[in-house]
Length: 412
Ligand code: MN
View 1 (tube, helix red, strand yellow):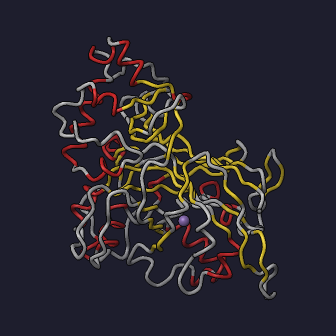
View 2 (cartoon, rainbow, N blue to C red):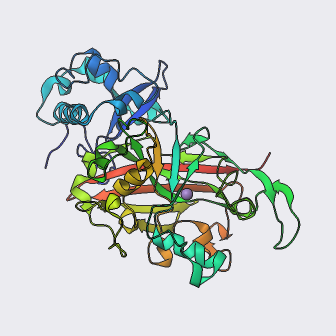
């Protein structure tokens, strides 16, 4: 098994096999830069580039790393990503002296995680949120429309999504203010305006778009994965009472636009390859433009914790629609995707009660409250901290996503 000269604990999310990309600012000062996570360190790629250690990758000398966002690197092509990843794997390997045996370079480039402030990884131009877990869609549909009309008629034919708000994306650790909005305090009552009483989270995984496609030129499904730069965790905070009152007929609006949290480290698709698995069988068969050759899902364990206590254990493989299908569908009408666009999966609920990946489902709209050490919960309360984490379990190592957390602040 390949090892790094940097010590990495077996349960660390960031072994040599992962090398997720992120953007950080050294707490000691200085501008933001692009790096990768290795064990408990962040490796400054701008410093490596300046030292000439990225020569021959196609990424060197282009100013890709001295930046406050990953967009320029995302806009590069897959051969560049591949060559850069190979160079970083070699430079961090136990047998490679270039970085290992240079104390000055190590001091400059290898910063303890505690010494850096993680930033939002990309400038997200457009953010799309899908609805791709059949379990989630069926549960929510059954609650609001009854079991006979749980899935909308198009659900099994196309990956449903809506256009999210990118301006309110925040990096993990950022507190989230309870929104005020228009809602009905009781079923049938007239609307009022006030703090949401039904604040929820949604456990999701998002993909970052790489090079993108020109306007008017759909991405064929066989080429769709070439557009995926990497994956991160997404918490799609949701105000259910605001959502229930506003969502028809155009979908969620202010119920979700107040904040969406992102994990800071973006796991490259290449690091997930060993964990590729088939998704659920699709019946009826999708139309030809949505037929993916080969398995399109990944075995990624997903967890949510409320004030430290496990409230959801799910897996990315439960998603009905794959990322390639989402990209092929998204672009099928000619819509262009751009570097750094975010496509989130939708709530990744699985088949069991424990795998229901938001409180709306987990408490069945409040009829089954959670009994936790911090007290009984139906919805999130002020001061609550919600944290998502995810990882793939390899043989003696984990390819992990780190964590995305947020504490709820009282309404203003
Ligand atoms: Mn969502």
